[in-house]
Length: 635
Image (cartoon, rainbow, N blue to C red; front, side, top):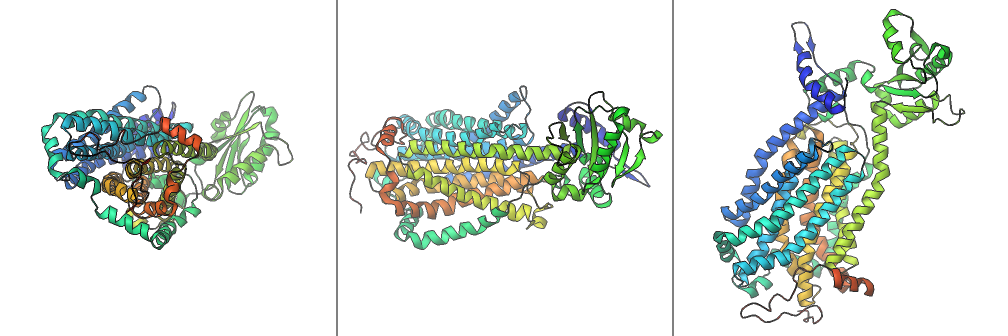
């Protein structure tokens, strides 16, 4: 079919139904790679609409359970809805400049809802705290934006950096997710720091909400000891007793990740019964090979003319002898197992011979068997390249070019692997810098990164155990292929790492604020977790619920994204935050806040602080609170 892939698939949407027929004696269905992924795009759009119908009422109910008031729940969900709608509008503008994958809309939906609600929860919670300290509504709003707003901005920056690194891959598919991620972060931060504060200042009902449900007095709000505080103190009293079992619990499900194997996607990304999958499965089961998977071998500098028929025939014959090759077509005819099965001068193949004729170059169509493509594609491509060049002793193979769907996928994987170290290094470096600017510590960013890698290991372990090995495939409704398409884990790494650091920033900002206020390395952890833990857990549950809507998707890619992100979000917001964070903070003590003198000076000048000044100095009936330079004794 003529035109680009997008144009071909658009045309397929028109002509495919015309070829689909159910007669008394036969049926006709359309298959092929473009039809498969056209139907994948159709399925993903249907999943997007179904997810919208599910995620909004579910998130609203969860927010109502958190606030106990519908108006606050609706306002918070509205921030997420604003992020989704605005991001989709921005992505529409991007389509005028470059291609954007349909799947990017699916990410925009769950990320927009998740981040919009996440940041709004954090801002509203801080607003309620300021009201409980006796501040008037305008002052409470201003102080909330001045303090919590900085944390939200830094948190958004960590997610933005992780997803922006997808732009380093030279593939529109992955870049599409970068556009969606950047859009959701910017719109969610804008909603939380501009629209939401205006609403809090304007709506008297929400101000009353803060006064009614917040702690009764400022002292209580600063010293309240709930489940998170009690749990953190218990973990820190016996760090090894709780830390080692928690580490074992996390390493066990992460172990399957060591067997991660990348492969190529095929029709099995679609549900059983979809027409293109039925066609390809019939061919896979009942036929030896198919033209869709033909490997194109271009021999540059060898004219496709009758004068070179001897050399062309010798090359085609040699190619047809390779293990995993079903047949070879060339200017001189069709070949299989070292023999010419159809000469080029018969009426039935004249039109085939014309395809290979050229004054400067010639090419060969090498059709591989299903087994040849399933076992070792890279090995088969290497053997084809060497044979087409004249054998291993023929010198350089620069005049040989390999194309076709299998070669494209092999090059795609190679390019991903080549860029992967750069992307991973940049993500880690920038997040370490952001966390240092927030904490002033060289140890805390490293610990946070290691904990996030541990939670990511659980996610990849779940991907391998479920989608590669096929466990739970019947319950989840998919067919395992024994491999995982490489771009999806890379996408999930960037999304999950950004979200994990998002929670890390929100948590450490409160711990840092308490440490600056009291100078107590132990009590600051417990109090910081008490004030951020419920919030992070609520945000995580809402984010997980948003991603979970894709667990029922008909497309394996979206199913992987949904289940993998649910696993990493819940593990990160519970076992990591409730156990390993206080354990490691206790084991390292005051070293958590150490930095070399030059870096300490850098942080003093450019670092982030949740509270720009001691919080109690301007409140009625309160006294100035101590800072980290004048610590109070540890109780």
